[in-house]
Length: 470
Image (cartoon, one colour):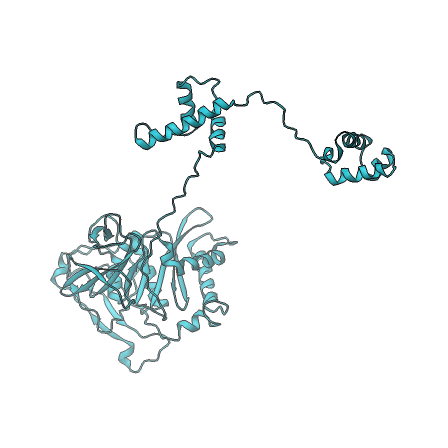
C-alpha cells in the first residue's frame, strides 16, 4: 500500500479534533482503524511534526568506515596522484591501487574497492573524464550555384533477402537534386566505370564529379602515383574528378542525405530477392523523385524542371569502350585533404609536404595534366574562391604521355560488355570510337552536330601496354 501523504494525515487529525470517532474517520478516509490510531498517537506525542515520515535507515551501521580510515583513503589518493605526476610510479590512482597501498601501510580493517571509490567521490577527489572531442577540420569546398556544376557520387551497402551484399551507387546534381543510381554485386573499378558512364549518359557531364576514396575510384592504395581507370575515363570525358576528404561524409553531404530517401523508398518494407528487383524498384523511385514538387530547396520546382532549364552535355548511348587502356588526356583532378601533424597530405599513395600549414584547416590539391607534363599544386581554398593562395607546386611524374582533349570535349562513351581479354600489341587492340552527341533536349543545327566520329590511333607507345578492362 502506498505511503499516506502528510496532508492526508492532517485531515484525519482535524476530523478527530472535531469530535468524530476513529471508526468514522477510518471509514471516511478509506483507511484501517489501526492507521488512524497510529497517527493519532504520533500526533499526541510529537504534534504536527510527528505526522511526517521517519527515516527508515538503520540507526547504526556495522560496516561504517571510521573517520581515520576515510582520512587514510583520501591521503593515499593524493600521494598516488603526486607520484604519478612526478613520474616516480605508474599512473594508477583508482580504488584498486588505493586498496593495495593501504594494505602495504597496514591499514585495518581494509575497506573494499567500492567503499574506497565512494569515499574519494564524496571527497571530490574524482575528476570527470574529459571527453576528447575530435578535432574539427575546416575543409575547403565548392560552392555550387548552377546546374551541371557539381555531381556527388557515393556507394551505400545493402543486403538481399538471401544475404548477398549489394553495392548501391547513387549520384545527385547538388543544385537541381536530380538523381540517378544503379546497384551492382561488387564495387570494383569495373562497376565504378559502368556506373559513371550511366551517370554521364543520364544526368549529363558536370564540371566536377565528386567521389569518395574507395579503391574502385582511386585506383587502389598500393602503387605510388597511381592513375586508375576512373581517372583516365574522367579526363577523356572532360569532367574534373574530385576526391572527398578521407572519412568525412559531410563533404559529400548532398548525396549522403539523399541515401536516406533512397533507403526508405527502395529498401524499407520491400522484398528484393535479386539485383534486377533492386534496380527496378530504384528506377521507379528515381522517376518519382525527379518529379516531386515538395522539395524544400527548389522553390516549388521539380528536380527535372530545374535540371533541364540548362541543357546538359550527355554521353551517347552507342559508344563502345574496348579493353584497350584509354589515353591520358589534358585536364585536372582534385583532392580535398587533411594536413597531418607532420605537415603532409597523402595523395595517390605519396606524402606531399605542405608549408605553413594549419592543422585545423584542410587543403585543396589539384593535379594539372598538360601535354608538356603534370604538376601537383596545393591551395588553401577551392577553385571557386577568388582570393585563394597557392601554397606550393610540385612536378608530378608520369609514365605515359598526355594527349590534348577532344575537339568538343564532349566525349561520349558506352562500355561494351565483353569477356575479359588481354591486348598484346596495338595490332590486336581495336581503337575506341569517340562519338559526340548533343543533349536529347536540344535540337541539332546541322547533321554534323548529331554525329562527329573520330578514330584515335594510340601510336607506338601503346604497343608496350598489356591491359585488361577486367
